[in-house]
Length: 137
Image (cartoon, rainbow, N blue to C red; front, side, top):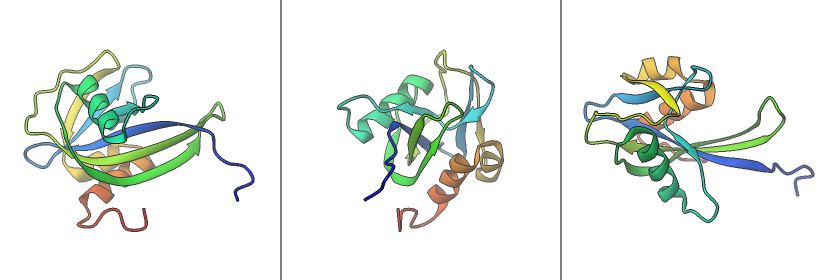
């Protein structure tokens, strides 16, 4: 048994592939940082429904969610627990309608998306590109 279990907020993000294989990244309004679209899972909300809802709310896109590719746990600067699950997703269109949470977006090639994102989110992009992304997950 773990002596100090993590009590955490759960967030879910999508590695969202566009019709030409590019990946969507969005710029946070709060601090200008770049991230994958997604957000917090609601109480009693199914995981896939939650990630779909968050991506739709933030981008106006209707994603197809393929499956989980990466997960990561950490403590933020306020020492609050966080747990994120990243999913491989696809969108049939590129027309993004951003919510108030974001100020900009870009569709990037995978290598540029990895460079633009934080370590765990960049890792999620790399895992989504793998043929068999979830072994050992």
